[in-house]
Amino acid sequence: MDKVKKIIALLENGLHEEALQKYNEVLFSGTHEERFVLAEELMQYGFLEEAKVLFERLLEAYPEEGELLVLLAETLIDLGKEEEAILTLEKINEQDGSYPQALLLLADLYQMEGLYEVSEKKLLQAKSILPNEPVIDFALGELFAEQGKFLEAIKAYEKVLPHEEVIGGVNVNQRMAESLSAGGAFEEALAYYEKALDDKLEIHTLFSYAFTALQAGYNRVAIEKFNELKEIDPEFHSLYLNLAKAYEREEDIENALETVKSGIKQDEFNKELYFYGGKLALKNNDEELAIELFREALAVDPEYMEAAITLNKIFLNQEKYEDVIEIVEMMTKIEAVEPQLLWDAAVSYQQLEEYSQALNKYNEAYNYFNKQPDFLADYGYFLIEEGKRKEAAEVFTELTRMEPNNEEYQDILQRLLDED
Image (tube, rainbow, N blue to C red; front, side):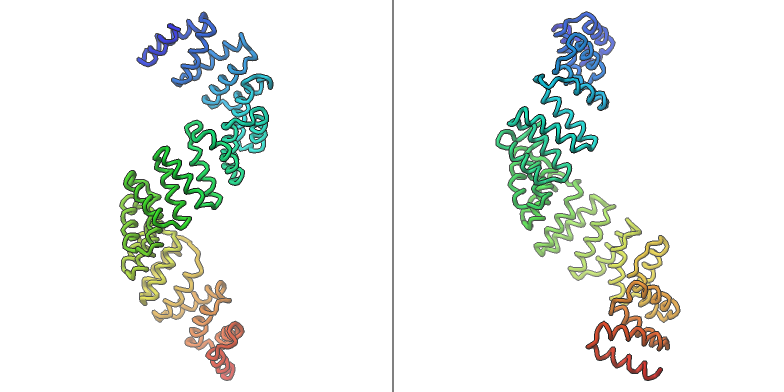
């Protein structure tokens, strides 16, 4: 094995030409054992083409050797030659000891291609040969989880955990937790997240644990874990919105707002943070801060309709009708269609005594809100003010049909009919 050691040493020292010369010596005149060991070493070091050639040379001598075929297939997969890998694996005899491994590789390849039924068939075939092999149950769990079949995934992972908690560098407790959480079993998922974190503190697992705690209603646990994550990695942007929600659920608006502000410092283009901060500010009776944050949300995304509508509600309440029109015109310029903006504009133009504009907006909005009493009331009173009594009578007729016990609407309708 001295030749192999020398080749690896040369590669490690960057002496590729000398390594290649000695590689050719092993390829053309080395023993089978030297070729096999060198091929495996080259795979580990990422010299895949060279490893592939060595495996192919070995297969000339041992064309039906399953272990060699599996290793060649793995090399081909790493090289991105999946179709060649499948053809190679299909050469392995069912009686060969490497056949279950070949089935696992085939299942993985078919799963990558989205051929889930074929993949499952290969795994079940492997399981019929090795019914108690945890790796096969784990592969089934991964397949089911990818398809969103979380109940089946949970059952598969349950078979793995008594034997193995980590397979291929993947924490099975984490996978179980994710499947339980995705299936809505939030409380059950928490225990598995704890086990996964006991094995290894990993930020994505910690986030998932905190997020699942939030979904389960364990707000204090969520707050603790999100803050722990913030200490480890303050640039983990997704934590801030969720931490703010956890604080809000605990009616701690001050800390919720501070969390939003911290999140904005880390991620200044996150429109959701600005919008949520605006809602928190409203809850804290700070309309000016809310307006500032909603405007920032619109600056990030000019088509952010929810922010525009919420801003308009504030402006209408404050009787800042020019500001309402400004928002409406801004959304109109980008051709963002939202019926509520038509109603907002109609009310604002009416208050600004721009009656022609108001009438146009009311007429447009009527197409969307003709079954909504609040709108019809605004529209009807406006029509009366404009002297359009016939049209107003039609609107109040509809209103009395919707609210037959509303005496005010009945009186107005009667007067309109009498005058007609």
